[in-house]
Image (cartoon, rainbow over all chains, first blue to last red; front, side, top):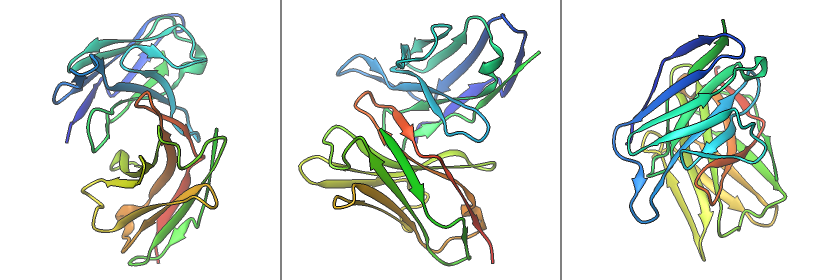
Length: 113
Length: 120
């Protein structure tokens, strides 16, 4: 199984400041056939199911604000929120879709400082 | 596309957990999609359990951790899919979600979630 490890486990950032969450996979999730990284980011708010933010490591899902961006390749990935808003308080998960079983990171809890 | 889950929230140990996910706005037979069950618990985090999908015939994949106990079946007549997990124990207590695997290799949308408690 591909193990996904996020850092940090929790993060407190001031409103308007940048938030950065890291995700590392135990093996490369860059598929050579299409040159795509099979890495997704989700946001989960209390009482709600996860919501897709970013797929293929850096493509924003339709309707996701442009303050959310994803980067990285191979085994190291980053989710950046450029200017934190109050509604961004949530738990964020990375997920690999490269191989079965599909696996998630343990989550990073983002709070307002 | 919307997914609507149904099923009991309380199951006794050693019995079978059964949940259904009704699909609107897409087809369970969609050649480009997969239909997945995922659960979340404090001890296991988000855990993918398995999927069913149609590519000229029906396929299924399951997580090794539940492979001996799980069945995910499509129901084309009702445009839905189901989860059966046998011989449950308290460790199977979790919020269970159904979700679609999309052609962009990501999940969305998700069902509303069902808290299933395994207790006598």
